[in-house]
Length: 82
Image 1 (cartoon, rainbow, N blue to C red):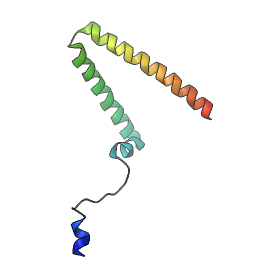
Image 2 (image 1 turned 45 degrees about the vertical axis):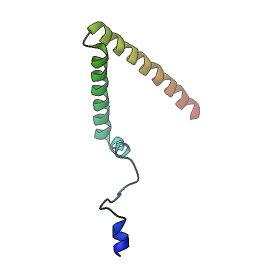
Image 3 (image 1 turned 60 degrees about the horizontal axis):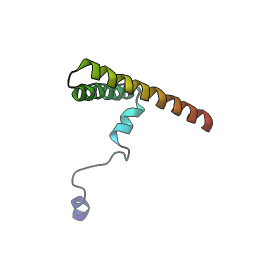
Image 4 (image 1 turned 90 degrees about the horizontal axis):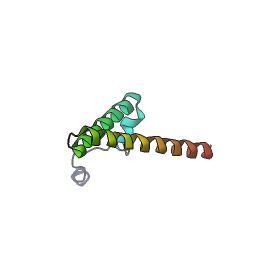
């Protein structure tokens, strides 16, 4: 009995899934994670651009184009697999 409790350390794994995956499955959690990611991306752009508007808007434009192309690629791959 004592040996079993020695290996426990007081932690109990309720699920083998990572926390981010469990949050992503919930509708409001997905919205929350997207907002947090968007805010972190904007802050990273501000840090890189050093508060220069022209560089900041150029970074945002490049990221929008990358997201657009990635979305289309994902869409076409998904269409082929179905």
